Length: 385
Image 1 (cartoon, rainbow, N blue to C red):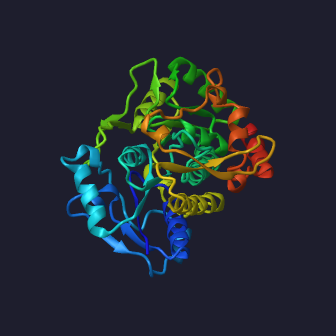
Image 2: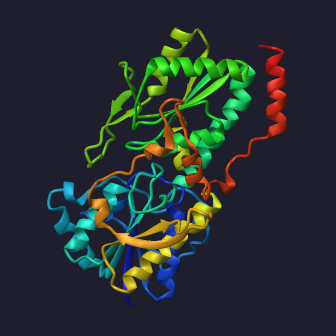
Image 3: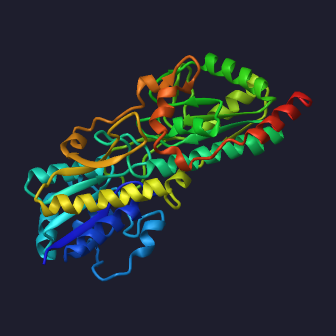
């Protein structure tokens, strides 16, 4: 009987448990023993914990967010004697194959271990959607849905009723995919991290759209957005971080104060943060995450180590998506996938049609704009501005 160990590492994403469900159920079908590693790579370092999932009832996993195996940002390559510890743990546990579920850091370490002969495959996940080699990363569709819904409801209910500007800060360390999803919720300005934003242009466009709406507006800004003026958030490093990442957060507070001072309009800052990383995955996200989990086990059974199951869109003429696989080495190169230049209009500070076309297969469950209510809002605004 083969023994498979699976774990989740790095930040949260709504489809993690669904991916685990796919891995575990497929391994069971093949008669394998399944171990769950607790807290990511830490499960294979000294003192790491494991749980036998072979006979456990896991039906609830596919419908729940988070990760039942918990997570951490442990990195065996940043730990003294870490690789030796990993190899010894695999030998002690009798593990024949490993599935690592995570983002660039988790999968980067997996790619290096595959080169050392470890039977391992990696499954992508990140709400940032910035990993190469896959049409989208599991977790992103759900996070984009939650952010778009949040933006739509804030604009339609709070911004309109109170005649305010709301600045919503979106997660995204290297790329603006999640920020751009705010446009699906009707955001009036979208400010991703890939381009230096003109503050003068921001003020002009926001003032114009605020008035056109009937004295209300929403802005979705990336946590890593940067401007041609000294506007910054707070730099921070997470406790236990072993990947040397310094992140910026709460730039929404800086923008709020600047907008109030320069436009004389009441503005509020909102930071949904980890909220979009949590919660039940939307059906498309859930189903494809399960499919990737199953694909990972199939690859290991065939001896195809150092691979990454991925999602493809075979034809731009349809909304159909499929599952394939690519070398894990593309993750080890540390080349993040930024928002495509064709998907963002730097003059309008909004995503283009190309972005909406990209999102079309994912957006089946996204919030629908109610034309009748929008028309009523417009009518009332024109008589009360």
